[in-house]
Structure formats: structure tokens, C-alpha cells
Image (cartoon, rainbow, N blue to C red; front, side, top):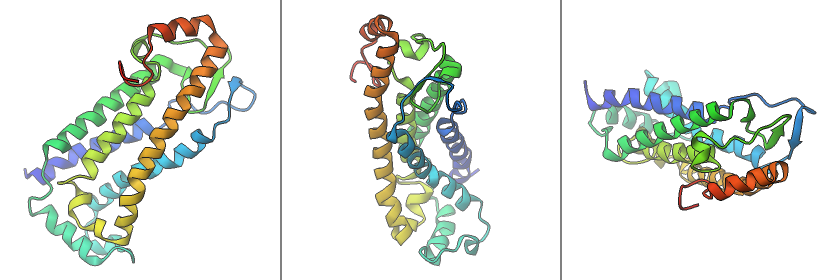
Length: 236
């Protein structure tokens, strides 16, 4: 089996991990069912940002399964890009580099951490900034290491996805599509969206801590003293 074909299971696994990370574990509660609900523009704006960040994973999967370049013709993407993709796939350029392998590992680690957060919080974890009725402060599992481990997990998958899809040896980097006008937009928007998503998470941390402190009082203060790190152990 060539190294090019060997990459396919890893890219598929990476895509599945991204899907898990971006999917809410619980549906939003209907209006009036929250004990506390704080509308947050960052939550609303980060959702399309995450979708745009994950778009190249779907694009790479489409490219990989296309049988003819004409199947994916686009006025902003020259036909030479599709020809270069086909040539690249069989020229040994799509190799498994150490950075690619590291990126897959980081994405997997982030996804596993995200799943553990889903399981630890259970029904309490939603993508909305809210508290449910009879909400409990969870301080066990990954929440005994940092106070916002699900954010840590999401950032890990963002970094891992960039390493697997955008650097040397990847489909996106080697097929020539980045030289098109669409590719130029990807170069500008993709990192920008990632930074916006990361910034929205960092800005949300303070509001979430304030909400929990107001609700749980001394219990939250004791937890914050025992677990001072918010996202990165010992650093932040």
C-alpha cells in the first residue's frame, strides 16, 4: 500500500474527530427551562466560525473521492488545480510527515478529552451559556485539572486539524488549489476563523466563571482555589 493511500484512514479519522468535537452533546433547552441563561453573541458567532473552520475537512474528503476533475469544477478553481491534484496523488507528494502524524495525535487527544468532558458533565453540558434547574458544580475528572477542559479540547482539535490539512504533504497544500482565488480566501479566512473561535472561547471563560461564582458562591471559590488553571494547566 502506498503512503498516499495509507493517509486516507487517518484523514477520515481526523474528520470524524472534528465532527464529534463540533457537535453539541445535548440539545438546547427550550425557553423557560433554564435556571440561568445569559445570551452571548460570542456563542452565536462562534458556531458558524467552527463550521467554516471544518469546511476544508469536507473539501478534502470530496477531493479524495472525486473520480473526475470535472466533477468538482468551479469557475474560481482552474482545471489545472484538479489535474495537479491527480498528479500529486500518485507522485509521492502526499506523504505522512512527522508534523501530519503529530497533528493526528493532537486531534485525537483533543477529541478524547472532549468526549470525557461530555461524559463528566452529562446533561449539564450545552453549548449555550446557561445553568439548568438543580444544576450541580462538577469538579471531578478533567475538571479537577483545569476549570474549562472542554475549551482545551476544542483548541487542541483546531491546532491538530491545521497541522494535518494545511501543511506540507497535505492534499490542500500539494494540489495547487491554494493558488486559486478560492484558495486565497482559504489562506486568509481559515486561520482568521480559528483565531476568532479561540478568542471567543477565551472571552467566554470570564463570563462562565462569573455565572458559576454567582450561583455556587463559596463552593465555586473553593474549587477555583484548588484548580486555579482555566484552560492550560499551570499556565492559564
